[in-house]
Image 1 (cartoon, rainbow, N blue to C red):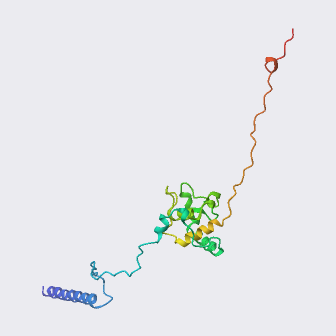
Image 2 (cartoon, rainbow, N blue to C red; image 1 turned 90 degrees about the vertical axis):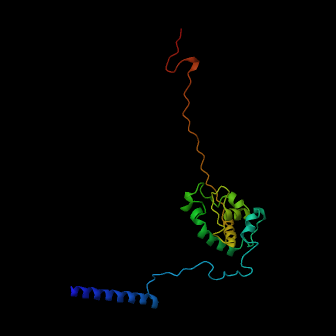
Image 3 (cartoon, rainbow, N blue to C red; image 1 turned 120 degrees about the horizontal axis):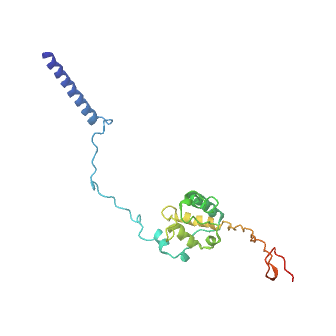
Length: 203
């Protein structure tokens, strides 16, 4: 019995020493276990004051949103080769997955849309003003058939991609040759009211 009590005592001392060592390790060493996370209470420190001029009160995206398409003009030279080159890069970054690498509306993502994406080489598309294209690219269509990219594509990049679209050659639809309608040959009509295959009777 005495041996058992001594063994229990020794085990208790060892457990106590191990516990104290673990607590010391947690509290005193930077590599301690993260058994208690620091609590961060709201407004423990004064809120930062925004510098003057950081938050816009005028201008920005809202100018383009409220303007009519006919009043929107590009700040860039739309026919400039460098602008068109940059617009091509924007197109293949944000537009090609829907409108296709050939600008014909045949691309993987676009096939899930209804109606399908527009062929950008279409004469109707190329005839639209820069402002009209900017509105559609930025804010989509009222029917929701085209996603808005105002929060995705920078303003100047939208003008650049319009310059690129305007530089495309119009698509000329291939005319299918006209096929003549095949009609069955006309049957020869019997003369004098006689049925075919009967001989005329003479008195």
